[in-house]
Image (tube, rainbow, N blue to C red; front, side, top):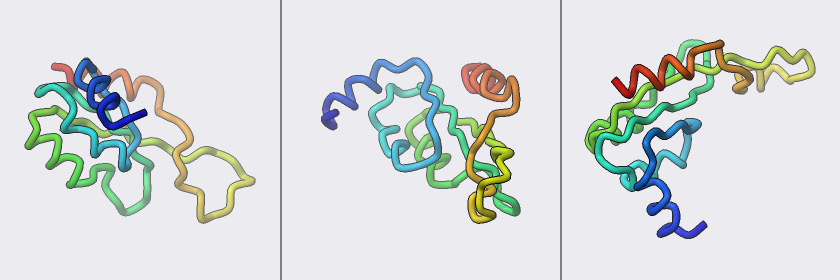
Length: 102
């Protein structure tokens, strides 16, 4: 998808739900006030939020909330990947979307 097409698509969004990462660099394409929910891996001793996403959203007028993902309960995963996003706590995404829209 071209950069122009991404901008057009995001300009019409009513709510954006995205994993934490480089895709959030597209926040400037959103209409001011568009709510954003960021899915973030739960990593011990690290907060869910990343200040650069929060700051960018704030400066652009987008309310932003983080939803922490809990590790997949998979005994075949190497310890290095024990914090890989695996599941949402039931209702957490819905709650965050409702909160960010209010």
